[in-house]
Length: 81
Image (cartoon, rainbow, N blue to C red):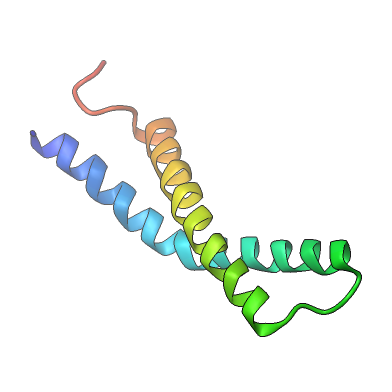
C-alpha cells in the first residue's frame, strides 16, 4: 500500500467516524417515528433500544459508503489517472 492509498483509506475512516453519530441518530429518529405510526401508539423502551441497535448498524454502512463515495468523487482513487 502506498502513501496515496493509505491517505485515502485514512480520510475515509475519519469522515465515516465523524458522520456516524448524526447519521445513526437520524436513522433512529425516523425508524422510531415510523414504528410509532405503524403501531398507532408510543413505543416502549425495549422497542426503542431495538431500533437503536438497528440504526447503529445501518449508520455504520451509510457513513462508510458516503465517506468512500465522497472521497472518490473529490480526490479519485489513488494510483489511477
